[in-house]
Image 1 (cartoon, one colour):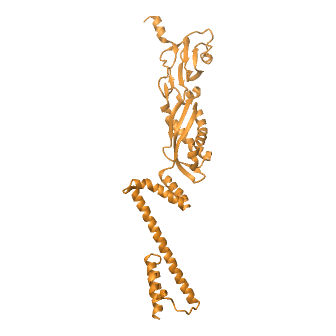
Image 2 (cartoon, one colour; image 1 turned 90 degrees about the vertical axis):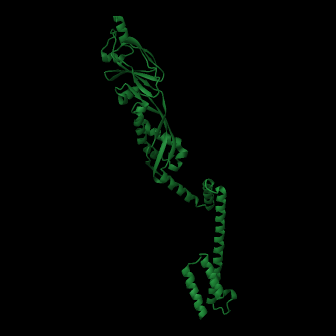
Image 3 (cartoon, rainbow, N blue to C red; image 1 turned 90 degrees about the horizontal axis):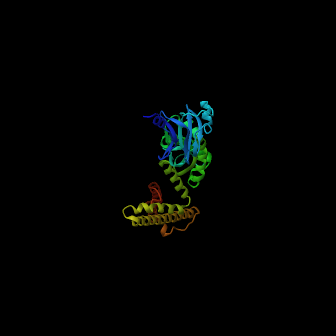
Length: 348
């Protein structure tokens, strides 16, 4: 190998990153036993940044564009290396490329229910799920706080850290928002903004920017949801007509899937109406009989001398009493005691 070929192989004239892999946040340019040629070219594409690191210290950060590497374009590195303007020799330095475009569609969620304060229920255990997007906003800080000397950092490697950051701030953000659980579905945008404001500083500390944060669903654990459903049903029961309509609406899809279908539901509703009518008639008859007995007692107490009518004979009274017992309007004990009293009076 000639000296010229050796020099050509060792010197790097163009540094660039095509950034063809999705989800890569940082990539170190391979520099094993190679030197960067003085006057070489650094190409940084849109949505990229490049960082020069000398012996673990960030020397310079370059934004999008084409940069010629000289002592004028690397003033900090020049100072660290004690170069002067006449020093035109190859140099070694680690070069890191960063993707600054948005990383979208990142999912977040509560694997277990979290407890938050609620002005309606006091304390609520709830679950929430959604999406967020972020990007590398400060390559220098990201390198210092997250990347270190790794050759590559991907979005997937940060998932656990970022999810933990979201969940750590979630409960506090919901509590500070003051949005009751029952109103969360109608105020998801407001709630998402409150959570993003709580999470933003934690992302900033890592050199990241939280560009968007969305809530897709908010729900209760199944036992609490059932309790809430019962409370809602009881509230509707305050208006019996609305409650009856609510019960019927719930019964229709259930009945449609059962034997007999909607026809069976109609028969059940008809039977229920008939039972209700029979109960009403029984109550009416019982009230009439009790009213007649009360009237007879009042007449006797007033000293009425007139003989009792035929309808007030002991046999009729016992018959009415038996009818009340059969309808379940009086107990067996009531029937037995009243019957004994009637028979006692009949015997004189």
